[in-house]
Length: 381
Image (tube, rainbow, N blue to C red; front, side):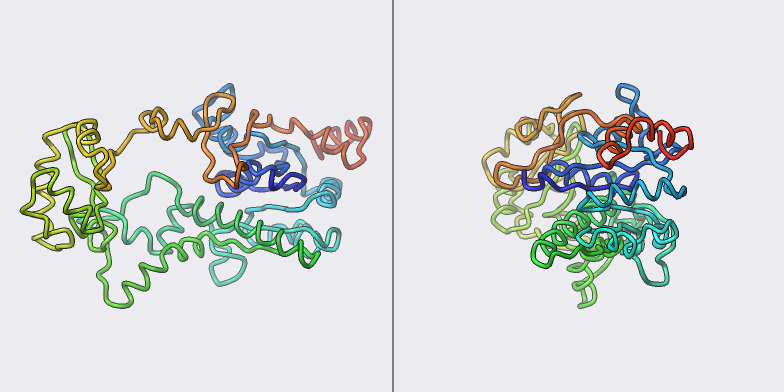
């Protein structure tokens, strides 16, 4: 695997960091979850559960190992540093400054292991006036302007169904930064500190929209080309749900109008205002006469960029989705890319809380008697 031999110490919790380390695990890295003695990763205990473990936690943490350490104790910090001596990457998502207060910041880590890559995921980055603000995905989407252009034509922003800033801005940004830092280390022999801001990540996604608005494009839900301003790029009702229409190119829109016998609106693909609403109403009137399955069959093979809006159960049973799935314990999982023949959803169960503490510490010279003393002292478990 591309990352076979790479060890990642993952101090993160919840979604962004664990998603990033899941991708790294799927590329072959050895992921070690460092969890405290007060419950560890909060996602472990979130319902619904699968075999007494959070189903969401299982999806994010297959194939990893877990160790419990009290990093506030001197002995716990020393054990972490001994593990860091064997690692290639430390991934963390604390607020800026927390690792420094624990005497485990970039300077301390690099003094012990100059080749170590430290990746810090935070909401606003490691510097700036708002770097210490608390927040979650919705807040970062709001600050980056993404919510202001997401919603209905009434202008009310909507809460997205997936955590876009967490995954797109945080997790995937962290993966890219870590891989770049490892490549740089190959050339220089030195590690780096990767500063991954979820707001910055979303701003990078927003950059074409920001450029368009600052050069005269209208702004707001339902007012921009890719958020519903035009009839050719909208979601429409049908008899049993919704159909997505993304016929941006004229050839797709014209073909769709011909197939649905609405040639009278074939010139309205990029109309706006009242003309757009009349064309959209005309198209929806036709789509309401059939089900999603009917339209999928009717439009199949015609290249018109129309797809049904599927429920999660429908997604999982979709033939294309199933074809790309990896078989894992408890069902199937999906990995976002392949590198040649490499890159798969990590196999195996998610680790039990602290299940690998003894084995991992044995790798850095802690024998059974010493481990039992550390447990008695409340340093590990």
